[in-house]
Image (cartoon, rainbow, N blue to C red; front, side):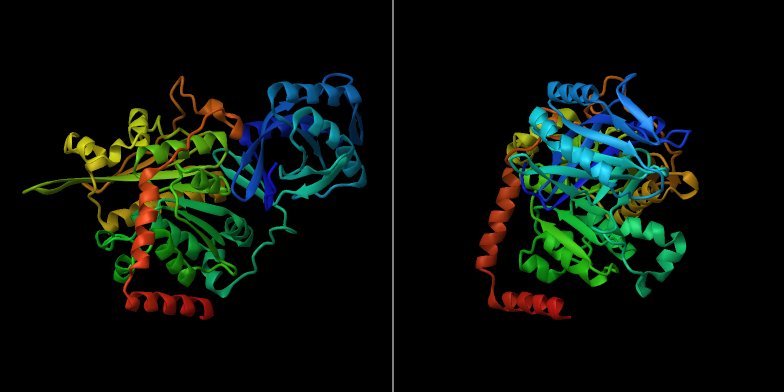
Length: 500
């Protein structure tokens, strides 16, 4: 496995509930079981996706206050993992709440079996501990030399369902210190909620009108790390809707993520705020792997290929996706006829983007083949085809972004136990909000079956993205010929940002 900077683990809420029913006993004793896991390799993070429990049979483990397993249980579990082409995980329970450390017996048991697990599966043994409040802690046993394995703690563990529950290793990801700038925010939902929100790594795919407003809302809410993913360049036509973008950005051919990242650093409230400015499409391997480093993704794209990939990530890699969209209809001589926008969560226990009608699977192939950037193909499409529609207003983007941010906040905070407001649709004309919809995928939809398969789905969803490559190339060429007055202004801005 590649040397990565951090590790994490994730599990569906359904499988988490199954594990809790087995491991958290009414008699107060600890218990154990094995499981299968699949890798999800991001650019800087490796995640173990727990896919299936292998529960003990009669005579395969002993309960004596603590718990221990017999050799033939481990052998059965390792064989099943090898046959499935999966990694082997070991779960056990501890008495007490929150992130759990390991006892000496815990360490010896996992370290002893790490070589055999790796030998059988080619993947590290992953250990997880379930606390009485449902919190999970996790670690990888990485091979560092023949017969020598090193414990690498995960930074956090996600439980993904209607609610997103995350347990953090405070040693590796300390809770942020209270700040005066966030006093009113913390007063609204408490320091514990703020600590969990702040430590989420949030990705925004598409730094356009909606994406830039979503990013601003998150930065002011105290999110400490935001990844911005967009290959496009700021143009004059964007300036009526693109937050933080200025004339100098269009004149200097600045990337949208660079322009937005600069603005966010000026308005962020987190103590150690960080942006990742990624000039890629999520359809490119670099962009796709960067998206897998995130805990939550916002889908702020308007083309089908990107949406289909985010749909895939939401299920296969257990990363909830917050999606939305705006549709405006205007007629010459009549003016505005309608403007609608929607917001919803996609992932385990939610309806997927294809079933929601957010993209047409047939158009994914057309875009992937480059037809959406072929003038002859575009000219042959009807005037009302989605690829030709580009009407929008900043106020509409503002409301759509607000809907998306509120969906994400409810998923994490779950006020009064309510984690989902359902799929929402607002009509500017005549000013009505539809009744929310709480639906799962259509029968036969393939996406729920991909849950927690990660890099083992057998599908390759990325490819060469010629438009993204062209945008980067044109930006680099334009920067080389940029007039000196713009270069000096950009240099002075960087100095001011660095030294305050």
